[in-house]
Length: 190
Image (cartoon, rainbow, N blue to C red):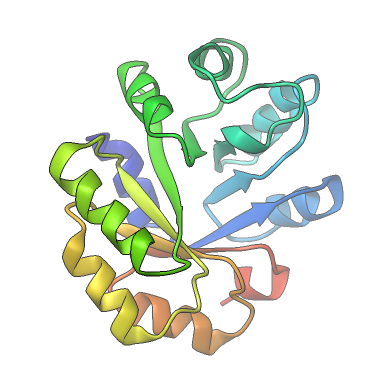
């Protein structure tokens, strides 16, 4: 478990999720403490993570979405050696283990489409890997469902996706989420 990474998330209950230059600039001017970089490309990524770090924020890269990188262990090593990323987001369990060995914070993204997704979480709890956090998408699930998910997990969770209003943030946090990630600059001000 990467305790400094978890503490940073605990201290930043609203996380900016950015996909382009415009929202990246807005996130750097906001009060959020963590910026999820969802996309960009292999060439621009070192500069993007450096900009986030220089703004006093923690850069976390969604590894599966970086153009020019395949979601493989070499990509994790690239992030560690060539960028200032302090954590990764991925749907790939093998990359969680690799990133942990390299000292990066880890977030496993899980899409809650049906009961099979809940079963996957149960299996993961039993056999691993055990990321620092699980990100549940969509983040606007009913409070009862979020509480059930929280009870199944042995690590903290965050919510992301479709979070646009204050009620969405309050629902997620009051249902046990450690934080929310949102692409809407209006949510970053909450």
